[in-house]
Structures are given as structure tokens and as C-alpha cells.
Length: 267
Image (cartoon, rainbow, N blue to C red; front, side, top):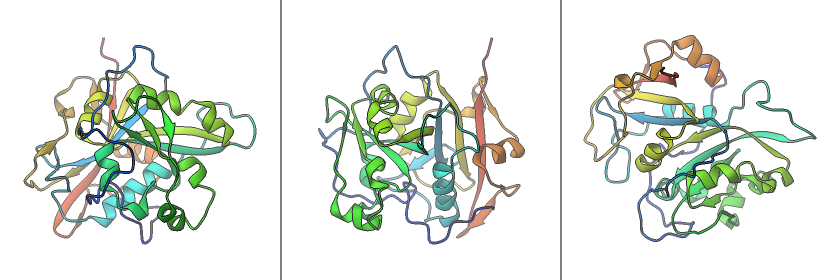
């Protein structure tokens, strides 16, 4: 693959239970009903799943840690497209955002959160309004004291619609940050809400080719939906910005393949 990642830190696909940073009311990853009026920020879901669409077991990954898959996730969610998605005034920094539920946030080891080089957004019903949180000392140390922590957040929001509005807010503009792509990274109920939104038009799915015991599943079989189409490898490479090995790769005895599904308008 191009742009190889070395010594990539654990990302959300390396689940570890940690105490929550955002306020919580004890609920699972969840979201309030989306607003009827949503900003037109396109959404891309990114996940890994077994043939039966399993994505988790007991709050962790069902399969062994796959460094190639984690590296792909990190590179793709950080990489911005070659050209800005909109006209930018001034010296704005072009970055992507990652949107997740509280339990997904909790699963990231504290020293690696917020996920570096991206605006982090956490959905939880533990807050009534959107707010920025203060970066912890451990997180500042992990970042090497870089100014990235000024935009990485996390932003805490009560719903996906509120989160998308926050990503268009003056708070980010004041930090000279322009959002290019928004990736939804879990968990299952956040995926479910996002799939119902009209601006969700892509799913980056890592197909784990071996079955593992799971208790959490992706809510939609894309192969059985008329509006979702599997893109070719060239289209996948164009979107993610790197070469993808045809037929997939293997690591620790587990085969997996990177895929892109795109939503088409069905008349």
C-alpha cells in the first residue's frame, strides 16, 4: 500500500475498556432522533465485519489485533482529498472528523484519545447541548504538546444532527479548521442512525473472511440493498487515496479485504 504507516497507535478497531471521559447516563451508544433539517455534510461509515456482519464481542473485537487493518483505518480517516470540498477563505487547516458513540470512545486507550489529526465527536445522551471538552494531561503528553489538541476535541453532542451542526460551527472556524470528510466509526446503534440519514453515501467495509463469535452486528446487509452498490477497486483507491491489494490480505491467519459501497439514487 502507498503511504505506509509505521508504529500506528491503536485505533477504535483495537477495543479496550476504559473509564468514560464524556458524561454518561449509563446508556449504550445511542442517538436522539435526527433533526428534520441536517447540514449537507456527506457521511462515510467505516468498519470491519465478519461474513455474518459481526463487529464486536463483549465490548472488544472478535478477531485478533490486525495492524494492517488498523493502519488502513488511521490513514484513511486522516487523509483529506487532494482538492478542498468547498471554497476556503484564509489559511484554514483541512482535516477530517470522526463521529462515534460514547462506548466507542471509552474503548480507545486514554493515551491515544482523542484520535490524532482528526476532529473527534462523541455522541452521548449525557449532555443536553454541544460542547467542547478540555484535553487531559495524558492526551496532551501523547500529542507531544502539539497545537492539534486545539481542534481534536472531543466535541460532545447529544445527537448526530447536533454533531453535524457543530462541525459547521464558528468554533471550528475560529480555530482555522475546515472539515473535509466525516467518518462514522461506531458503535452499532450509531451506525443504524447514520444509515437512515440522506447524506450517508459511502460505507468503507473491511470484510473479515473468517467467522468469529459475536454479540454485536452491523445493522444492514449492504449486498441485499438495491441502493447500495459495491464499487470497483479503482474507485476504492481513488476515494481512500492509496493502492489496495486485489483479493485482500492476511494477517495472523485472518484474511480480510478492503471494500467500498456507495449509495445510488433508486428511482
